Amino acid sequence: MGALERSEAQAPAPYLRIAAELRDRIASGELRAGEKVPSTRRITQEWGVAMATATKVLTVLRQEGLVRAVPGVGTVVEGPGRPGAAAAPRRPRARDAEPGLTRERIVRTAVRIADAEGAAALSMRAIAAQLGVSTMALYRHVQGKDELVVMMADAVFGEDELPADAPADWRGRLEAAARLQWALYRRHPWLAKAMSFTRPLLSANALTHMEWAMAPVVRLGLGAHDLLHITVTVAGYVRGVAVNLEEEAEAEQDTGITNDQWLEERYPAMAEIVESGAYAMYGQIMRAPGVDLSLDSMFEFGLLRLLDGLGVYLEGARPAR
Image (cartoon, rainbow, N blue to C red; front, side):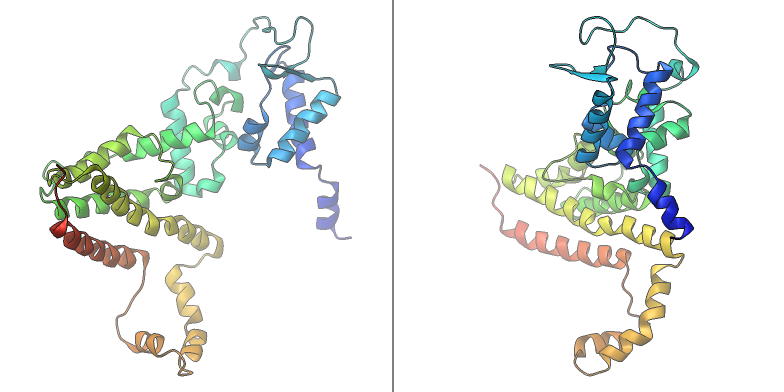
């Protein structure tokens, strides 16, 4: 057995490692008798593990007599007194005081981490490490990662003021709005995957952006069905292309080569397949000078064709009565 295999064999299971961290918090007094310990949901968010692993963590601590389940409360640290009783006040330690810790600082730090390292690197523990505070200190300001992502999206949608001299016609405004959204996704590649149109984030700034984008369309007098679906179709198109931005950035970071370099390395193999004669269209594309495909070119081409199609639709649409 090699050194790496021995190291992996000796490494404790994730649930044991997490249980040990919580055990240390209890022993140090960070979590005191009667205080709630992280729930299984919070453990999955904070440590990035599966629900089954989180359940094992609390099972271990219960078996050791360190915690107990209290109906209607959750899992609390075992200790004297009635179940779920609040712990006696204690002198705050340096990491508990956190006088400069605010929701705004937490959100700004989370955005910086996600921008630099991707959504996969974003965790409550990573944010706490950046801020030099305990992970539990964050939960005094943010309920959890789900709420944090909503706050992050709202913050970045509010970064730029909407232009006062924007086009007043429906096509010009939708195109301008789509380009603003594309620029936003380019600055924050994690954002596209965080957005959803079936379960939308409750972001006031995002709603403000959509209202601004749709104002000229609203003046056409369309019904609610058309207004909603035009809004979602245009915004959904931009997001649909933008979800590839983070994957492209991660691939470049992992391999050390750009997408263009990756394609250049594989061009000879691709050419050999295409020149077999079975793929006439691809052969024409590869032989044509100046033909390029990128996320930006996909966005540009698709956006203009989408707006062309909306123009045809709106010509025959009837105003709401």
